[in-house]
Image (cartoon, rainbow, N blue to C red):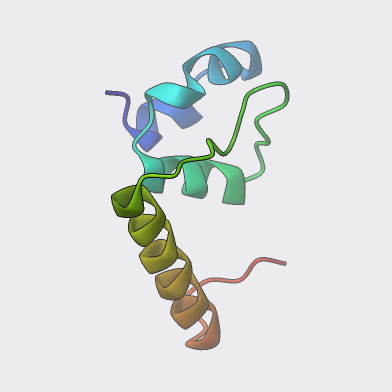
Amino acid sequence: MLTLKEFLRLSNEEKIRMYNQLREEDRLLARMSDWSPGGTIVLKESNDPKVIQKQKEMMEQLKKDIEEGKVNLL
């Protein structure tokens, strides 16, 4: 598994190729940085209740962090 720190040091072409090697949380942080994933698939649809619940929890945490001023999306 690739760390976000290692990922951010890669060239843009390598980032596109290695994007899916990041943890789910690090993929979010990578997208929030100046980098965008280009031709990679960012979200995978899932019917798995565990995956859906985890995504809900992540979005709630992000919403909370934005409200508390810990994250600025602009």
